[in-house]
Length: 199
Image (cartoon, rainbow, N blue to C red):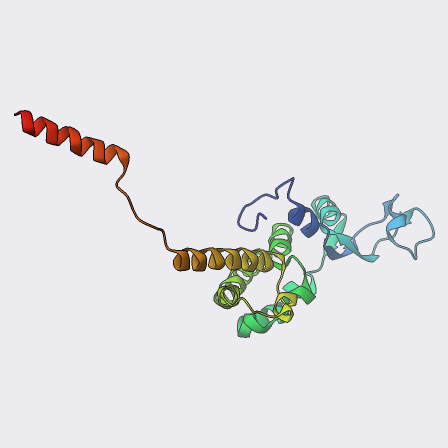
């Protein structure tokens, strides 16, 4: 997952799936040969003013060519950002977007007007939820209900945290055994003793 990188990873399944999320768009001019995108359209032409939800990968290309204008998805609008600022730890991110952080990063690339606010909101949301995520990872009996409220990145971090916690617990219980001197150190001491003996 490339949440912290500028570019998507071409071979990353989560990045591919995040780019499949739909973006509300309105066509700013008539477009030929895209009529199949709208089930209510009779011909091959999409008319100016038609509103559709397009996958990010298609919408981003059309936005660059000024063919469509985008509207922020519900999960990133100002009203929802205010909810996240109030208390991000109780929000069900799974309902808004399975790839909340990654998709938000992608949306910020094509919406420069709200880019800075959106990036700050996403980062602060992650910071606010991280401590609770760590607590859940250390609790081996955390409910499935908790996992249902997390987005893909948080689920992955929680799974990795649980594995790390189990390995640490096992290491603390089993101990490390007897710590021995390294072979190089012990042979160096022997040579030094022999050298001191002959001098």
